[in-house]
Image (cartoon, rainbow, N blue to C red; front, side):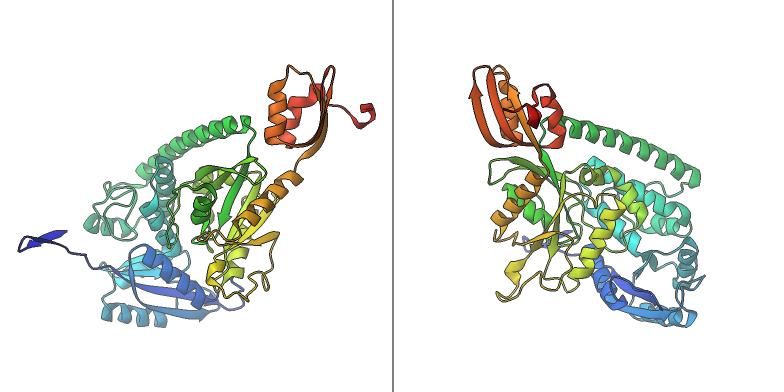
Length: 445
């Protein structure tokens, strides 16, 4: 909104909604983060969504209350605080069951929205989705999340919404699909879910065709993975001299971006940046983003970017490795990029106290320190996957000679009267191109 005073233009910044955070620690559980640290992460998520966090509370329980998730006494205490602080949104750090949602909405009244971590993450996704694919994936995840929760949520939307999918308008928890169809029933939502799934399947098929075409070029693919805000997009920019959106916020990148990079040895490799991971990422969100995450499953190796300055870096590494296992890609070769070393004292070894799953290279995606060493480590890892091969190519097969030189590793060549002998190594998927000209060790004189 703008106002003009004495011919000068001033922006009026609307006040941010106030949020109150609630966490539960279960006795005997061993979470990646303590309830205090998990609430600190939730606070960052809330701020990313544009909220002002005005307070928080936590409770130690044997198990969640079957009706209200937290104990009745603690609930009344929090309700009094939210009234006193004029809170707009109460956010629970764990995913609430629909029955919890209903009872909590009754307790807090119609003027306060009740969200959980999943709803908040989906709201941020809606805010940052920019492509058709990203928006469809967010819509599917939100619809499937909201379907069993069709209670007072819809009357909230009727009064307060007015935005559209993609993050325009509405308060936090209201962005994305649904705002313009507030009277829909379960059947209509079910039909919309089917439609979105069909559209996403078409997108997935298109991506599959693109990947198949990309594979015809036989360029190795490195998937950049990591905890949200670890510096993945900044690293891709550094590697490729590109201008991928990077920001000091959670989930700045939602849609995958692929860039071609020339390695120190001259080999070309594709690097793909994907959505960041986070602890307590629900399975349904992972499933909804299958089309995006397939960029990881189709990769030749993983580049795991780690923020070594984060106080809970070990927990973040474990969370990412758990999700990679869930995606069934933990068998792929992996290199860890220990990022943000420019923020560490010179005498600190970033890998000293970390249980790292693979080769680790200290880097700074901002300054470029360590990038050359990282590229060399990646290239060496790729070369380790190459299969030893000796071929004798006719001189009229210049296409295969070029392919061997561009995509493989040539150890030596021998020019003969009837062809050229090449000794070297090739990616396994390229070997069939050379089957007609391949020589076994016992036939080589």
